[in-house]
Length: 249
Ligand SMILES: NC(=O)c1ccc[n+]([C@@H]2O[C@H](COP(=O)([O-])OP(=O)(O)OC[C@H]3O[C@@H](n4cnc5c(N)ncnc54)[C@H](OP(=O)(O)O)[C@@H]3O)[C@@H](O)[C@H]2O)c1
Image (cartoon, rainbow, N blue to C red):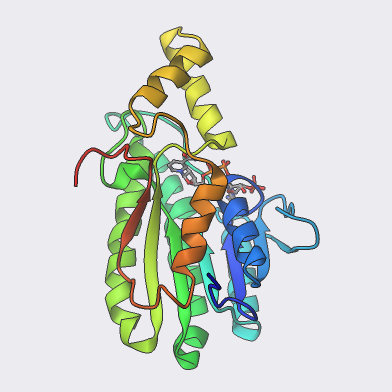
């Protein structure tokens, strides 16, 4: 299937590794010109345009917003680093504020800066990477569950505001996809419980009907589809890529 992305420009945030990198590679494979942004500015594939961006640094975000005024994009994939693990009880106000300032506020501002050109063109795609924790909160990931809930509310509200302009706004929710972040979280759990890493991973796989972690490529394929011409009538949705892990409907 030709996704119709040849000639489109896509900005992917958090694109040096993991889910963002896989999304960037898939969009590039479909013919889009991809700008891969991250703190390190590392390229997810040879020859890809890169951009140094720290979502937690307001000056860095402001520089990207300035750039978008002169160099518009057709596709925006919002992604960020995950926050520290920890319970809901006892989280400091500062920790909540820092998580919101790194994971939500910059995404809202960058999307706002990208939207005018998409609306003027009558075509645009905004895809935000979330988490299964939006639908089924993950124990000991309170900051992620809470802030991503806010992002989900924003995404759904925005989708209705711009739908008639040909701009779709969706989220993709990873369950457990094999990336550095997942390896880090499994390591934290192993340290906390005293179990071996292999035992933690085996127990985790046992909760997934598919019986395995997903691959970044499987995740990136869904992001690319939501950016396609074919997905023009899909908006305001949260699509799960989770091997059936989320138990609710
Ligand atoms: N993997 C999963 O199964 C899973 C499940 C649920 C939710 N998620 C969430 O999905 C997102 C992506 O997951 P992942 O597994 O791909 O994570 P990852 O392997 O940790 O990659 C995170 C990416 O974001 C970039 N990044 C981190 N902090 C940034 C910042 N302040 N400004 C700009 N870029 C930043 C990183 O690059 P630099 O270090 O170069 O900046 C990297 O490219 C995370 O928020 C994660 O919590 C993942």
